[in-house]
Image (cartoon, rainbow over all chains, first blue to last red; front, side, top):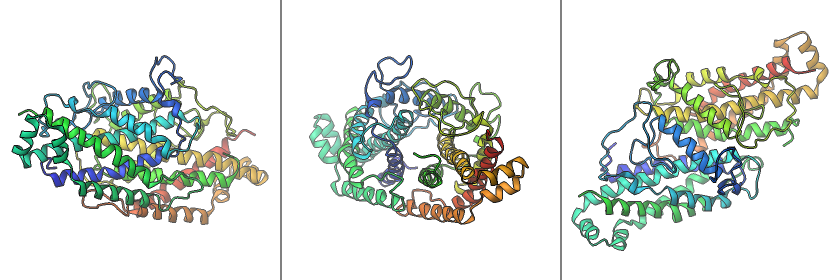
Length: 245
Length: 245
């Protein structure tokens, strides 16, 4: 995979869309269960002040780390600091010019944006299925996070490479508004949004709606418009402002 | 949910189909990576003779147990014995008349059947993404296992209740062939298979095939025909032969 080629990067981002849609649909089979996002309400023995979601994220990331996750720049942990894998993991040079990849860690925006969206695509109330519910949350959050961090790092580097002088000037003057304008490709964003709407519709076309909850495509579209796309651009700016010269 | 009503049970099984399709499609984005299924080849420090998949199943199930999984009869672990959850889990009486739910544990058939299917829907070879690959395996296996155990327990009990005398005679004479015949509803099986084909097609209708691997619907159809449906019926027979009178 050529991670300096903007068209390859865009295609990779596109290939992540199905997974995000699948995970959100699976999460929607459980009620909103908002208590699982409240600090100190986990009901988990010996867990202190964390929410149940935070606990699940912590255990999941500890396990994933052993199996080689978080060795590549686009895999950023929500909770844990990165530790050592117990299998041989892919640690190749992916062309990310950062001293510390965690300067582009958008997981807290992602988590907050996601939690705000939950009541819009899950049934209201509490079905008692807290374990299953946070399990699906974690899978959805990981898929969204991979998309946002991949887009933040590689798309920014590739855009920079196409016009080092133009970007260099904006970086030197710390002109965030100028960077935002230069990074934005409105017609691409609209194409992504249209595509995510079509995928959400197609994926649910054969569902028996009397037994499975369906997500309104507008909710995923809005999530892309208000969270995924702007947070990715915020990540691109963070990348550029911290890029090693 | 009325777990004695065969039509409710069938609808629940139907509602699990999307999740199974989603997980298989996500797994197909990685190569077959057959070494991850080989004993002693995990490359995992301090792991002994297990395969990487077995290790992932072990860690996943330990975590899931803490979060309340395996407290209901249709959730059977692949590797671990059941231990105590650390959150309040749903432990209601679901009408399963077994002394020990683990007499209906089909996880080893499920795992073996699944591993045999992998080369038919994943790209051949090894892409080095072993951690991600077994991660998706576990999610697929759990979704398949829930479907099979749910169908084994509740469908068998509900069929029994509809004709206790007819089933009672076959159970008393240990007539497994007779039970298999009485449990089989050929037209229902064909309807399930047709539905799973349509869902696999619809779910992948909008995929960009140049960047995402697509699963041949025939492979999932064959998996339903050769593994999911017959193993569920095997589970129903096991249930009936061990049913408390």
